[in-house]
Image (tube, rainbow, N blue to C red; front, side, top):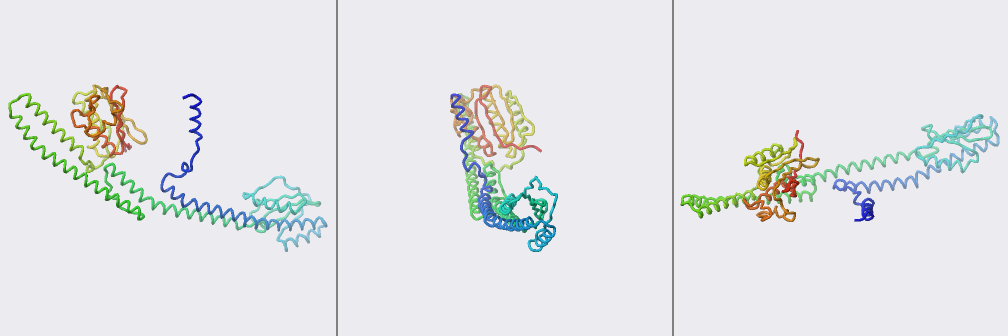
Length: 457
């Protein structure tokens, strides 16, 4: 790929058009809350907009124009006769008839600073009203006094200072409506959160029960709850779980019975062959019988139900060390790099068999084996590497198939029946993990056992 093509592809990834679902919540609780809260919020915004546009601003404009008209009349009459007697008469009339306080400041000067209100519409409507009624310079302040508005007008005799009640200039009940509107929105949203959470909780419990069952763990406290549809789904899950448990128990019992029935004639055959004179044919027959017993053990292990074993907290460091110690008894060279504090909640016997299978396989096909662990926030990885022949990439998935033998590349199960890796991967997945095969830096097979990790207390 050329530099230009690489730059174009990178730019496309960075500036790709984002779809609506990229911004919406991914969980059921978030989406349900959005379905309930979004229409309410949009309706409240529309009502608030209509209120301000058609009601509150209209009333405020009319009140401001009324006060501006009174200020203009007083100012005009004072300009026609700026005597103290006329000022007193105008002040008394303004106080009695217009509820305005008028004071003359002969040496006053209009302020230069502007004190804007939080609600800019208040200043805008009053300024528009005064501009429409007065021809002389003016200044006003809607923020200094909580209950009053100050207006100053330039006249030939000085500054006329008007003090008007705030409710005479603006509609003071608008903020109450806004407060109750916002309060109602929060109350409705809070009620929606409570009800939606109660509806989502049974679904989450059902999902947790299904996940625990998939890992072979029982959840005795689970019972159907919630809405009718959720109860139906939970009841169907319980019935399905019981059918699966019965099926596994019947299969295990059947294979155990077959194994028991076959062991008796096999034992008699081994005894009879042992009593016969030793020959090459007798030795081969005994070896075949031993292989048949190993096959029966493999079949039974593959079909055995592990769920009856109680899940406990397992120290993986100790478990790995014990498995490696068992393998070293046969003279295997194993290098270990194990971190401290590795733990998982699971079935110890099943995980022990899984690790024993993987380590014994590495020891059987390699002269040197290395076991290491790596932990991150999500999981624990147990890496088992050897310097043996390894497995070709196109045969990796076939290695996990039951009863499969990888001849002649690397026969992982030449002494068994082809169930070792299959059982190991089933055990890993039952604990919420997996097994991945690959090429090791040592030249052989690299097995990565991934498990959900926990911190030891």
